[in-house]
Length: 92
Image 1: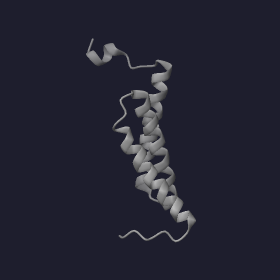
Image 2: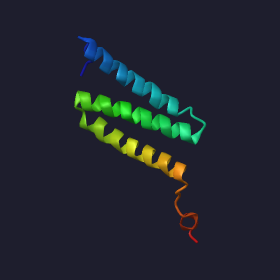
Image 3: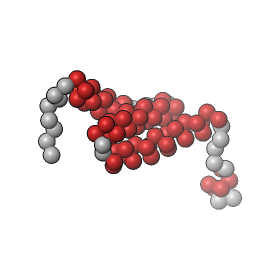
Image 4: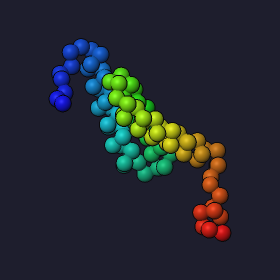
C-alpha cells in the first residue's frame, strides 16, 4: 500500500495529526519526569486515536484506546496517591 499525496486541506491536516502524534509519542521516550511521561502518552494516544478514527483503522483505534486508558489511569493514580498495596507485591 502506498501513501497518496494530500488532495485537500483535510488530508493535509490529517497527515499533520499523524506526524504530530509520532513526535509526541517519540518525545515520551525522553521524558525524565514520570508525570510528563504519562501526559505525553495521553496526548500521543489521543492524537493517534483521532487519526485512527478518521482513517477508519480499527487496530490503531483499539491500540490507542488501551494506551490512553492505561496512561490516564496511571496519571490519575499518581495524583490521588492511590497505589497498589506494597505488601502484596513483596509477597508478605
